[in-house]
Image (tube, rainbow, N blue to C red; front, side, top):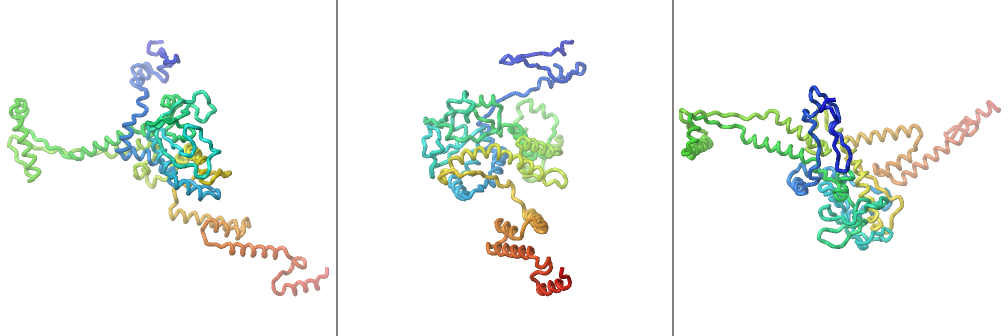
Length: 467
């Protein structure tokens, strides 16, 4: 075995053996050996969160702001609905405490800084565990948003894995204050997920969602700025003069030469006329802009991929491809938003609801659950097509006898499609009962009915066939 093909082993700080040359190798071409430059490429951790840079990017660049704000606004724009009878009272309490705005603010700061939360200010002391059984009507006073830069964790729980705050602080302290706040009063909003070891190093907080996009955002912004600067110099004027280098090297004529060509530029700007000596030559070289649009488009795609937001939502541009409206990308994006609603937003809101709902109603109702409203509203054409499909489906079920006319009337009345009164529904039910009773009554062996002449027809049949 040659020296280049021998496996080189190295050890980490905890003594774990790490192989440094795993993968495909070719000693003839040098691929995978020390002569391959790719062998020395590796990912490494930099600064986990440069807070000053993140804040500057969010405050000054619209792309960075959209990366943080767009997913949060899409996830909370249509909000939620409670199916219980007290849903209107819960909605009123949400509006009074601005729960929708508080949720948006908490998740935006969590995405920017890597963590944030909401402090539940009630009539119970903050330094004691929050007792949900003692929550009565009007107990919740305020919802206060605090990001990770405004609050510090203390006394981390590293010994009780059964507790809800395992590897998280038992108490928090607001920066500048002294009162310890028990963790049960603080509902955390997560940021971008980190491995468990990195989260412990980061004092229990997550990573910023903007940090992973910073390199691509910088590339896109710098390329756009470079193109804008290049447009300002679309044409470059060049004047050639014999012996100019000797004149400038002498050091005595620098000011005279600069004044000479400054005057030439001023005359050309004011009068579109330039005066040159017979020994001077003037040329204009236009700058080339070919391919710049493709470069910017590629950089925008990289930013869109890093942010996990389609270009139609992040930049408002049309998708590529004939007949592609970008609806497929938006559907995939909405599916990802729905997943975050269930995994992150629901857990966050249910923790707040344990205090907000008893404070609004006086007690916690049974089976008090909410559903997320659709993320997008259909257009008029889509709504009309959907209603037509529903009407055709109801008509088929009515013809098959699966449902009754009164049942369809009650369904339409509850949906608010038509102003059908309860008297109309009861009249339809009475008609259906009368029709059913008439079908069940079959006199004289099934001949006749309530129609005129039915009795005479039955008598004639009886005389013809006594049996």
